[in-house]
Image (spheres, rainbow, N blue to C red):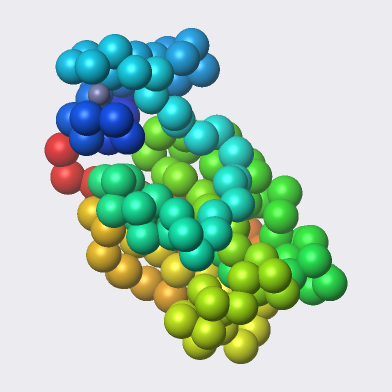
Amino acid sequence: MPDTSVIVRCKNCLMLNRILHSRLGNKPVCGSCKTVIEVPQEPIWTKAESFDRDIAYWPETLLIVFTATTCLHCKIIEPLVRELALKHAGKLKVMKVDVETDEYLAQRFAVTKTPTFIVYRNAAEVIRVDGAPKDKTDLVTWIENLMGFTSY
Ligand SMILES: [Zn+2]
């Protein structure tokens, strides 16, 4: 497989950095300010305070999963979401919102079902799905198809 690169925005100076996929795990530093660039390789929890910044600073595909600890469907899709985050680290960031503890975000997005998925690209919402996919592998196909539209 060719060693593809990803583009990640530095949280310190906001410069876009191109990073080889194979180096994502080696604490890559920003070419401009030398700050270590964080590239999540697993789903991360987000909160109301950091939510908008998390979206604005991520130029690639961002998947937000609204989830609840008591939700069985959420448990079923959890391993798939983790796998996606690892497999596409740098190109895809996965953020989770706990709708039971984060009522602000749940209300802002009018989430009535869990899991609910919202995908952003270039900080703009592109697609939203309320409720678990019929077949759980649909989720993987769906995300990977969306990522196929990357234009650089
Ligand atoms: Zn920087």
